[in-house]
Every structure is written in C-alpha cells, then in structure tokens.
Image (cartoon, rainbow, N blue to C red; front, top):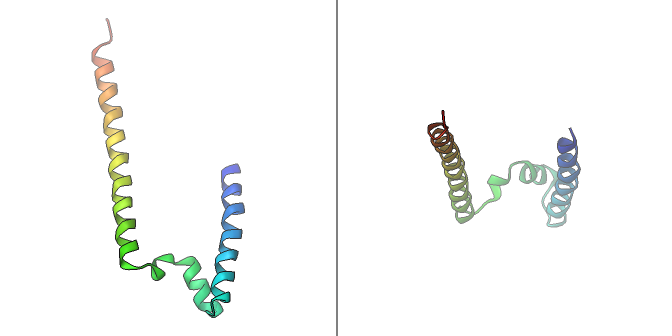
Length: 82
C-alpha cells in the first residue's frame, strides 16, 4: 500500500508539470492530455527504436536470471550429502 501511495505522489505532480509545459508551448488541453497519457505518440523513430532495444534487453535479462536460479537449484540438489 505504501508503494502505491508513493507512486501516486510522484505520478500526479509529474503529469501536472507535463500538462503545464505543453500548455505553455501552445498546445490545447486535448493535445496536452493526449501527450501526457500516451507518450508513444510524440516519440521520434530513433527514440522508439531505443525503447524497444532496452525493453528486449530487460526481458532477456529476466529470463537469463530465472534460468540461472533454476540451474543453481538443480546443482545444489545434486550435491546434497545423503
């Protein structure tokens, strides 16, 4: 519950700042809300490619760690003195 509260306390001011900056740049409120809640619409192709690469690296590292933990467990089970 504390984690959810802290997340909201950080998210709300950041969204307000984003909306305020868009309005100061001359966007109307509808476009500002669209930019704030769907950031992929305003990304350049290079930013989108970099995001996808980082996301793929994150997924591969998750599966690699999971596989290493399973390998550790099987080697520990094989070396248990009986």
